[in-house]
Image 1 (cartoon, rainbow, N blue to C red):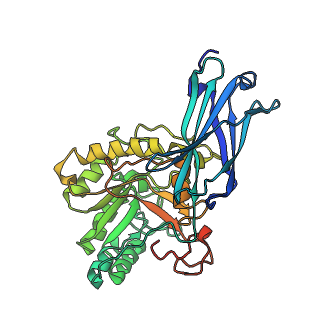
Image 2 (cartoon, helix red, strand yellow):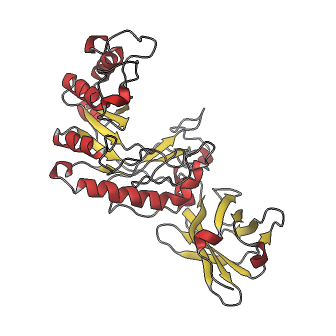
Image 3 (cartoon, rainbow, N blue to C red):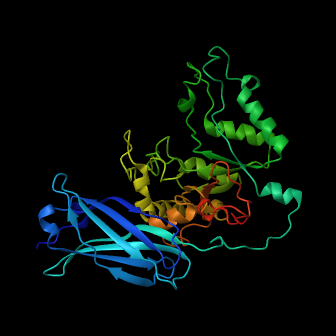
Length: 386
């Protein structure tokens, strides 16, 4: 059998598990669907499905499932029941898949994070820690708020000028921040190109840029700092164009106005471009962005190198922390929660490139994270640490 490059031969179409939270001694069923694997080859292919402990990378066991070709579609399905050892350590595990030629033994496909799950128990997988008491000032300084910085007039008022006194959104944002006492805001992008806002309302030749809007806010609240969220669909990183965020970031850093720089938002839910402008999953309508889950290590590495390169490009960035791209998760440790996503993606340690891990853990509707009687499947058993 002639070896075929993995990218050309096999693509994981889906990887489903019967449960994410088995107890030791129970069973889970893994169902993997592959496409682009030639049906004629399936009879001569050996599949190795390894159960690996994340973090320590301990090999628990290797299984050899059968490949079942679907003649109509050309897809191949693997269905494998996995016995969870009685004495297994609680935590997150992943499945690794290797496909090789039965005769020659040559490997032609390998996926080190095809899927994963959490082996659970009666208590929350999240540990407890003691935190120091905070003053009210320090508590407020630890908090922030997401803000839409393009707060100019709505199209409902096309004849009102761009002067500051009539920009109601700006005045309300300043008033709200002062009332809350918050000095940290998060915004996706911060364009320094007035043309970006020239159609709100149209025509608006003197429309301020997003960067100018932020400076107006900061003039009213001098201690205001920004967590700059890189725009995931922005193709302009490093191209020197008006849409390139690096010049704006340098201006903000030199002004001491950056709380942090954050990688693209929730790649598992949104279109995300690489720093070179290539989409990890096609961004056309109907794209399955959840497939980015299996590219998390690539996304983290690509953007980590880009942001780290920026940080080392000027001393003004020296104290600005870098945040990883966020994980969007309902949970925090439910079937599609933080730990579930971690297990699915087989996320590696990227601490050499980033300073802070970034997780968006949303509590499910109708359940309290502080409920000591909550169901562990939904992140409540108890889960105050979340």
